[in-house]
Image (cartoon, rainbow, N blue to C red; front, side, top):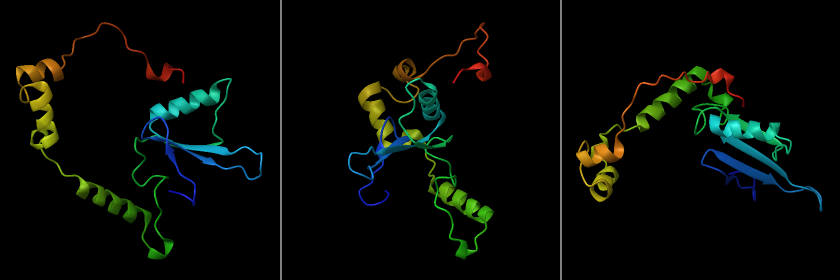
Length: 152
């Protein structure tokens, strides 16, 4: 959404969008802004900012949560006239979110059944499914990198 004629465009993935504001005067340059969610996209923006080439965006809104944060900064705020306290609104948002979740067994999903039937060639936990979809874990002797030492 946005103002008339301004459209957010998905760029790299569903969690990265950009908007170009047109130049205010003829011959001027437009301004690019971005919004991104999730650490992968944040890392990419940080790399751009640190690079010699620089970042193409003049403004970037980021949220650590993939798909944005429930009741986070990118969410619509309650009307102050409603008198609803922030904690009440957060609890109501959580209840609405939980109510929309319908747990069911994956094997009852027609799409999953179709994948097993058409591509796997056997049902869940069949030998064909184990060969194609399951993995095994092995002990490793190597020490893993400390995540705090990763250079962003």
